[in-house]
Image (cartoon, rainbow, N blue to C red; front, side):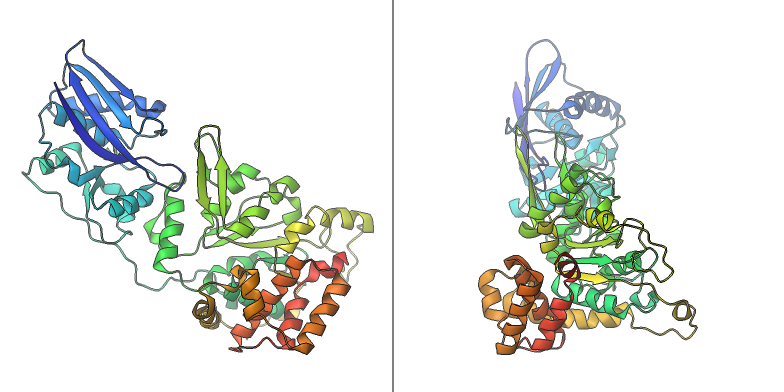
Length: 502
């Protein structure tokens, strides 16, 4: 009898490929079949769509209805196709006009009453529709999130009837205004709240300026977690592009993305019982893991040796590549994972090694086994190793405590980061070997100092390159073009665990 074509979007990893919803009505016993590799939630949409159409005083066609979700080999999941399927049936049965359908793309789950319910993964969908130069009709609950993508016409609706009236030309849907938060990001946890620990704060500033990975070693209660939680507040402000990439990953996750967190650096802190799949992502329909949810932000691993060693080893590749590819029998999914690793650990199993009160009774063998839970290749990928010692009680109880705020430190960090972007277009931790040779040159004194460190600590080539990158960041913080011996010496001093292993 007739056929209607409506456009929607699927979700595959961080991508939102086009799905063409083809609805065909023909003579035969009344039935409705959905083809095109639909999973259970998509197959069940026929019942939601039927009830929504009938409850809005439309006629559900008593024909043989075939719905094809093309391409046929692309897995389809969730209720996001409900709206497109309902409109396709109404258009194929001539209850709404078809002439304007090719101008729009539709996503949204239908309630039995026809009300539109929100779906996950709106930001990747909006970015893809913007590239396709079409308009987007979606549930009102997703409008703020979608509006983070600029230069696209977004038409939110509360109900199936609102969409049908709009397509019929009787009452137009109002375009949603673009939501951009230009107010400064408030810092909830300020660096000035941390008493003493000047050495650790200095390392934190260097890590923030160059994007370097950091591990802190110290007994319980010395402020390792406090320091890690305050790192996002001193990182350079997020660019529009980076904020959108980070929001897109959160958008496809289980909890979705809250527009109130726009341009706020993500901070992820999984428990040490987390599995490898929880960290890198996975599942039959792959979902992003903690490393991807920390994209352009911080992944904090507290009690690092308590993580399963095999779990920690899965971090090695994404730490280098900045992405993770999850392979399944039917398809692959790729997620971005440009995160900054911050870890914390105790110096020994009981945590009190070197304590003046003599509370530690760990043997050398126990301490060695404890530290060997972290492999050498993983430690090589961590640029800064620092000690966070106990703070004397007198300093903790000082009433006239004054320290630099996060805003003051962030100003220096942002200036150093700007110098890196102007020089190479990237943060120092991303420098490749050729750029290290060009921008991390040492004078004769610096070369001799580095040679002694390599011989005494037994550093690998990767660890040597990490030291040079850190030295380059230290020089950038002082606005110095040439790496001096003092910059290099400070960078070498941040290889605490290499000295322990040697």
